[in-house]
Structure formats: C-alpha cells, structure tokens
Image (cartoon, rainbow, N blue to C red):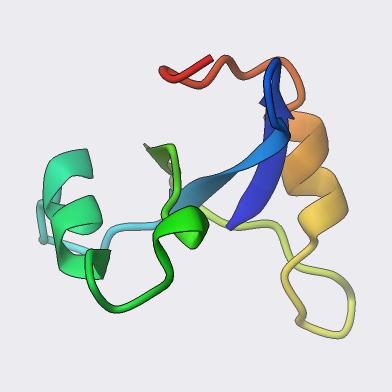
Length: 78
C-alpha cells in the first residue's frame, strides 16, 4: 500500500498487489475482503495489479520506486 495524491485529502491509499500465479482476483473482491478487517479510513481508494513489486538490495519492498511509478496515478475518488 502506498499513498498517492488526492485533491481533497492530500494523499489516499492505493493497494498495489501481484496476483498469485494462475489466480484471478479483481478490485472489488480485494476491497470486499478487507472491509471490516481494517479501519474504514485505511481502506484503499483503488487497487492496481502489477507483475512484480520492486525490492531493495536487502529484499525489502522499495516504496520509493512504487511511489515514483504511480506518481501521476489518478484515484477514482479524486
């Protein structure tokens, strides 16, 4: 999950995931799964599916690269 620009709230969450090989999942299913498990204001405004998540040399998720990749992304709620 990364924060992307939102005109009213400055930033809102965007969920970026890599689906498991051979599995299909859609945006609505992901959001429905999370509903009630996390605080309402933590719920992502959108979900994006990618082939891979960038990692640092130590194996951690490289959020800087993810934010750069999605810097011009427009949320549906924006």
